[in-house]
Image (cartoon, rainbow, N blue to C red):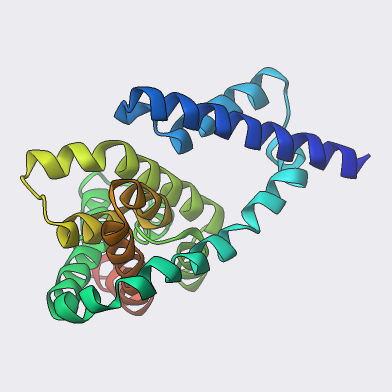
Length: 230
C-alpha cells in the first residue's frame, strides 16, 4: 500500500510540475515560476483532501533525494566556464561573502527589531542557503530544522519570482552580478532560475551558492550568539 501511495504522490508531483513549467514557458510571467505554482497547487490539494505532511512525504521524500544529484550536476556548467571563474574569482568571492553576511545579519536584526522569538530568529538566519545546510545550522544553534527549511523555501521561491525584476530595477545586467545574486540570495532555486537566463549565469550562481553556504556555516552561529547575547 505504501509503495502504491508513494508512486501516486511522485507521479502527481511530477505531472503538476511539468504542466506548470509549460505554463511558465508560454507566458513567462514572474509569478508563474513553476517551483512556486507547483508548491501552491500541492498545498491546496493536500488541504482539500486532508492529507497531512507525513502522508505526502511517503512519496515526497524520494523526490527530495534527487536534490543531491541535482546540485552535483551543476558542476558541469561550472567546469565548462572555469575560465570565467578564474577571471572573476576575486570579485565574485567578495560579492558572495558580502551578500551572505547581509543575508545573515538582515534577517537577525529585522527579527530583533520586530521582537520575534529567538527560536524563529535562529531558524531565519540561514535562510539563504540550501536546505540541508540551513537545517544543520539550525541544529547547531538549537533551533528548529523544519522551520529553517520553510524559511529556505520562502527565500528561494521569492528570489526566483522577484529576483530578476529587482536586478533589472537596480540595473544589474552583467552575468556575474546576476549569477552571484541568485546563488547567494536564493540558493538552488535561484540557481535554476539563473540557468534559465544563461549557462554563464548558472555557473556563477552555482559557485555563489556553494561559497555562500560555507560562509553561512562558519559565521552564522557566531553572529546569532553575538547579537542575541549583546
